[in-house]
Length: 72
Image (cartoon, rainbow, N blue to C red; front, side):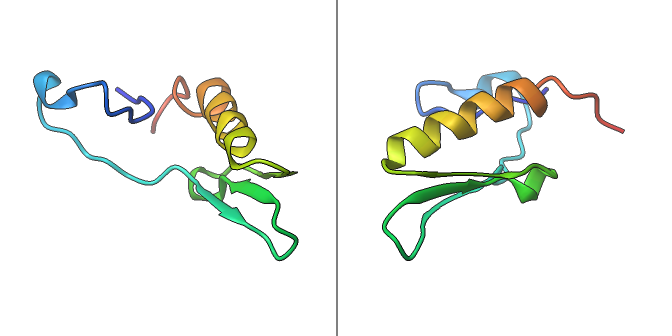
């Protein structure tokens, strides 16, 4: 099972878990934000003026392209 980590979920209830980074949301030299999804073979999204916009884009991309993707 794949999901996006959220502090409101107690994933320990489902059994053994493995938490891994899905992206890096970081500022660039211009003070804008990007979401680098290369960790999960995705694109770099952005730049965005607000960190919250980069985080929202990250979650949208992960939900559409990673959470439900079949694993090998």
